[in-house]
Image 1 (cartoon, helix red, strand yellow):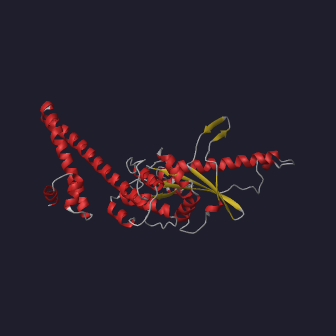
Image 2 (cartoon, one colour):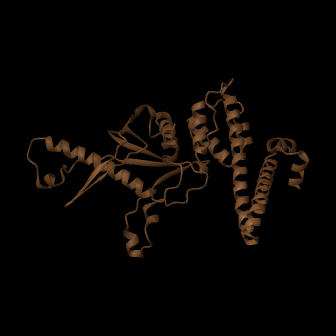
Image 3 (cartoon, rainbow, N blue to C red):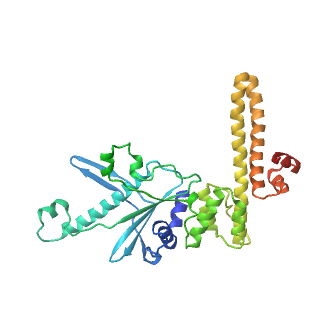
Length: 339
């Protein structure tokens, strides 16, 4: 199943959706009620019409829900981002604008069917003076390991403006929550809290912390799948493998992820070593240099990666014997790395 589908399905749950919005946008106040949320159309496509110009825009949102609030309703949209998008404020502005345009056209369509005389102003706009659109709230969820380095509002995307222009510029702020910087939020929904905490701590390499915090807790396969999707880990869960308990699923998933990270490290070390070796080899002579450079590069790359992993795990409290077992090296060699 594709990553975007897994994340969309996770947030389709009214309980998770409401808790996310209440915690991030409303400082923990219960503004959205799960039992009052209704599915809304995610298709925001529209036709932009100006004098002598028409432009169709096809846009689909990730998750959209509608809820009663007071005597009216609010539309809430959620956008999933696994990487920073440097035009995201403009993109959310477009989504919201198309949402307002869609409701405007629905409202004018109803007005046209009504009988009775219209004023010139009502005929011109298609609306009555008392007609109102409903608010749209958009929240962007960013799953990346590194902090968001893109713009947070429309002003951030605009070239530097002279003060007189900047003072009257109409800005548009984007609502953003980042997995990697989510300690401040106290989620009430256990599944949302689990996804955010485990994903965040594993992005930081804190495997032992996760095992300690969740040693007495069950984590379902659905939640593990979401976490694996956020981490970009194909081996976080091995489908079809029978396990005795949900706790064992977590332990197995963590071990799969750890081994996958080690393999990635080896691969990266070898790649960097080969690159450095080839570069050095070219300066010494194409034929001899490439041969020696690749050989030395692979060796140095693996050695450097082993040293990095050993140092990190030792700082996390692992014994030299355990590190030696994970790296497949003699314990004496591990001790020498750590000296």
